[in-house]
Length: 99
Image (cartoon, rainbow, N blue to C red; front, side, top):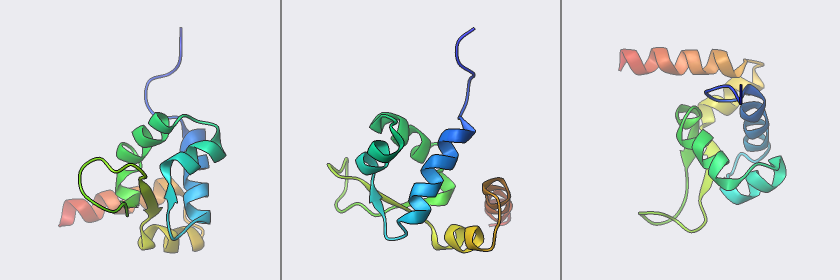
């Protein structure tokens, strides 16, 4: 049977809550440490399902040694308004289709 395909909503929730608690940005490794997930798992989520919600604020080009990510200001604002992650992602998809 194994694990289900796709992204786990519990992992998404944990990652988003840590990013929301650190609006100035946080290292991928620090997120991994706080969630007890591996850094490659965090990177997979940040580059995958969470890509429309986050900004990469790392210095330099190429593959940075210490990668810092944060939630986009729009996402933080919507979370403070009480919006759900699914609602925020739906809004971002609609805006992306319009542009």
